[in-house]
Image (cartoon, rainbow over all chains, first blue to last red; front, side):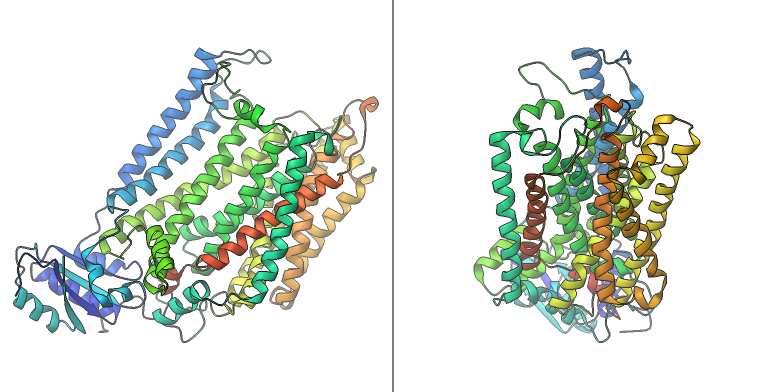
Length: 178
Length: 456
């Protein structure tokens, strides 16, 4: 009954420990297109599925450097080139005074990069996702823990995968319609 | 979101599970029965907001002549209120960012509404410098660097433009931080809402959040980095606010102690406001299991610690006035403690230095009604501090021939009280429509949230 029409199999667990144990076993069995759904961030699941890589810090560094260059450049260009104004004989290129706005624009663009970068890496906004088709999935944001093996995985085999998840203590294994 | 510790949690009442935490906090929002007290409080706040609207309308029609400011006191209520409000906001960022980096778990149940308080306080603060220009539309090109038809650019060598950058960055980053923290909780509300329209609205705001482990990895990193960015940012904001004064040459303003003294004062005032809001909130909504006595007492301790830094600032101002040997500085201090406005100085010492030190006694520190009283006293004291710094420094400066006095007009007062209406209106809307406590972070405090090897 499995086929390309299926998104994957979703197993439900009642305890965080049950999910972590299952995630470790599934990863050990060679499944790679696996995702866990938890009501709060769990380091242990990330460890079990080897999902610790994130590109957010690189984006933040780039955003911060851009903000720094933009803030400094704006002040230099407007105070020295475009609109030099003699105020109390102070130099046009008053670099110590430029540090404060430069710091603020650095923080501003780094924060933009962190937030919008995170949303983009997660593919948000994404109003539709197949896992929402499983009726019990609403409890993923309350007190249930889910593990999904996607049908695109090389090792995915409807019956065998279902047996594996059942054997790992899942209270329920549901098919996820695409 | 410090990683959940492996010890007992006095920061959450006994017997809670993932489900009870979720249901309790989300039910405050998803209920169809709004408490009667909410309508009463919102009504009062909204009336004050309308008073603000009327005052601002009259201000824009008539100009700043309706306020008490004039030569020699050119900065009055507007700047006092600006500094007061922006200072209050600082506690929210301290709780959400600095205590996160320090892995203080007790921050979890108070960070959401403290961040909301930050946003609303900054919104109130931002109105004052803009409106005290009288005709704010004319002032846009003084503040914002944009290519205008006059070819003018702001003067980046002035602390006032630094202030524009600091406060607008602070407002933006605080809003982003707050929204990122809300995303998983908005998803909870989406999943638990019964009404289709409510579900749709929260669903759109949640952006499709589904708690995927891949998403949590990016999310946690982004949240941590935002906390790391907010920490120097919040310190920079009140430092820059203090530069507005310290860079000038007016006796009473020109002091190197200003940045740390202002930052400590901001945290002091902010924690007082968090207590002022938290104490009625936990009572009205029965949140004593989440905002426990541990939270209340810790906040009292932070207030007490920062009050000592502030008291040191007062002492140093007086000492430096004498030690500098400068006749104007000495006169400023003497005028401050014995002049026509000396009652404001002694009231300030009473509110900010004397009353707060009663919190050394544990019995008083753990008495909720007493703490509520102290938090109000501190808010008054911090307002008076800004009054003393601004007005008593200006009203008698270098030339006795240009001395004067200052008092707020009824419009000064109606604008100040009106911004309290704006603040409370936004706060009442927030506690009705968004989860007041971070649900997903509370789940991490539930016993058993961290799987151990020997379980399962």
